[in-house]
Image (tube, rainbow, N blue to C red; front, side):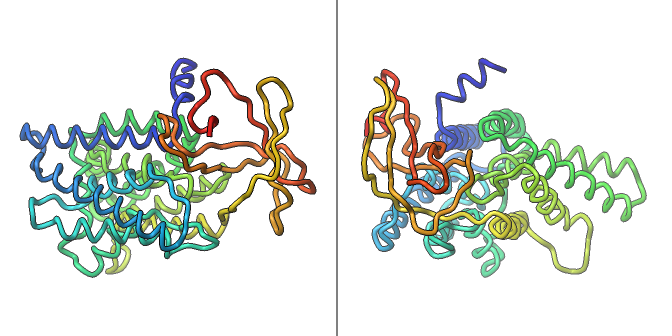
Amino acid sequence: MKQIDALLNKITMYRLTLYFLIGLAALGIAFGFAGIIPYGGLDILTNLTVAVASCYVSNLLFSKVFKAVTNIESVFISALIITLIFPVAFTSTLLPVAVVSVIAMASKYLLTISRKHIANPAAVAVLVVGFFVPDYAALWWIGSGVMTLPVFIGGVLLMRKIRREDLAFSFIVTFLMLSAIGTFLQNGSFSQVLLVWKQSFISSALFFFAFVMLTEPLTSPVTKKLQRFYGVLVGILYASPLLRLGGFTLTPEMALVVGNIFAYIVTPKYRLLLTLERKIKLTQDTYLFDFGKIAGFKFRPGQYLEWTLPHSPSDARGNRRYFSIVSAPHENLMMAVKFYEPSSSYKKS
């Protein structure tokens, strides 16, 4: 496990997620060309191209209009998620996937509070399109059985990186318990319950939802206790179709968006636009960065911030980092950074 942690520590969460999703898309395309899954490799590749291009261009426009700092990795992550869950059919889905991509990027700038988006952009987009055009509701083709093992292995590594194991576990356990109750009440058969569980485990859609979409740090709670509540809540909503409660059925993306709103209410997040006031050399390789006193900003000792520093070109670790706040709550906002040789492109910038 130490070797795995050492490897994971060399890459950021965003870059790990990006590589993981690229790998899944590549596998899906290869399986499609080989006829292993019921979706064409060319169809998936075309949808991916449209999603990436649409997300990139629309995000570029929105970022300029709103004068916002953006993380290009998150743009490609959203495009890949859309590709992996949206319907796949050559030519007929090209316009819808472009629309979904633009809506996803728009939600990052429009559906915000204190300049922070409150729900997973891809989930919001497919939810909106699926509501108005049911024929283009999310397909979740990533749930093809042959994709289960790659999704599970990559998902476990991602959970290890972002320390969201409790969240994913509470969601999966809640879903399995409620699906068992709902299935038994309808059929009165334990064998049917086992069949539903088997279908859930061989469908990578459950693990993809749990490991990739549910646990996104920006739209999930920050404390372990609240993460468990969040996992249970979304697990209940995710399992609702199997419970057959009333005539209204929640989709997975709807369950996620409701959970995201809950997460924002219990742990609201916001952005700070900071200006460096001074830099102090503490030791031969350690510097203190002072950003002055930030009006209205409160924090507790030991808390940290996620820092975005746009720079080009960026290396494999990307343009975002987590750094602890080293100052006391009544002092200026400061962080200390140790520089190693060779330093990352982020630290050099």
